[in-house]
Length: 578
View 1 (cartoon, rainbow, N blue to C red):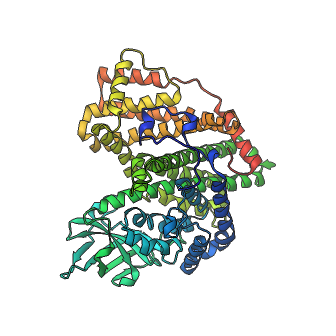
View 2 (cartoon, rainbow, N blue to C red):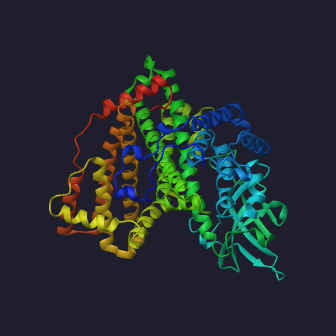
View 3 (cartoon, rainbow, N blue to C red):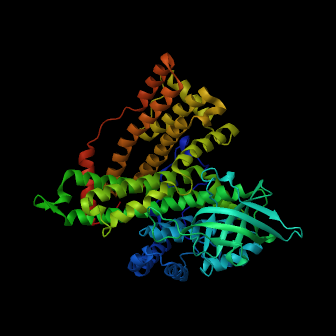
């Protein structure tokens, strides 16, 4: 991998809850190299010159145009960022990959088509393909000669992917698997040349296959009629006695879940990047419109409630951007440490599965918030097809369902942390025990706001685990509430470290971090109360709430003034800025 030159420590996934990092230990957008910035400019130029002028044609389902644009993106290297040089790729770092995803985000339909091909349609072969499979397919994917897609979901197997019914049977001569079944919601389904298909060998062994359209016996169904992403192809995929050579089994028979779940880590991270780009684009549109639109004799940008919306949009974008690039920095650091290992890239993503899930959940919910506020700033025009917020609002709703629903990702976040804690991989249990001992001895409140949010995680998770033990996974509302506090901890610590790293050079970052922290403590407290009240009662609950109150003491700040300053800087610049 290239571009990242500053050494960052290879830290353990989830360790942000129990370890303190220094500002210089995290990667932020301020650390972008000249090459990173050139990649961003290339992506912006491609989007401005090729995608934006064709937005209406894309919305009319001109998939020949989509294929042409993907080939043009390949010509400037945008589809091959992750692919090794020996297979025709750029072999750049994860930050570069996220930058490209972010800058493709301003048209939801094209971003979906691009991500399905260059992301989850290519990653399975990149991470799990044999050398022969990589040599055969990666160069053609890098050049967009072949357009790829990812076929996991079925009508009865969405979040529960392992409930798939598609079958694969080995032919008597042992040379092919014959696939039968139907996949659903396949992005690029209508025009892809290559499908990563999951089916059960003999109805039992969940397995991944590389399926070429040219094999025959595989065909897309009718285009789905969707709420948004009108310009992306979404179809069922019909498998009818599709003969797949045995050498096209991806990874191992019966190990398809390893492929699926690890690829989803990449998909979640890149979806977070798309959401960051979407937030920035909508904030720019909203700021411009607020300055142009007049009411009661002056621009609506001068009204406090409009400024509040712009400020909150900027804060969400700042928070999502911070965790995105912090996560890419961790992945790149771990990859660099272990790069000689054949599976170093996959292992790096697997290590940070929790952080990838947080990026997906926080990013998708931040973008939905930003899109909703953009509609509101535009007023009636925000509801009109001819203005940017209307399409963006419809397009972004799917992000909370893509790559595992946000509900599933919330369950996974705490579930993965608890699994690591129980195995001894992550020292959460000793940390929670120390907290409880200190709390009830009256010595546990010495921390800043971020530290207090981390302590809320340990308190809530400790009480919940003490109550339910291994059955905690069945208490979904409790698990989701714990995950929400975990997310607040990662987001706020990242914003705080990023701001400190700037050393006072950005009043905008300082204001955005102050607002974020102030609001996060309140949200975390509410979630912690939910957990405690669900897991205790009487004197035990009162004692726990008394401990919690010590973690929520915070001097109020003038958030009104801070938001006005944030909004004014956005309006002056006409765009998102830090």
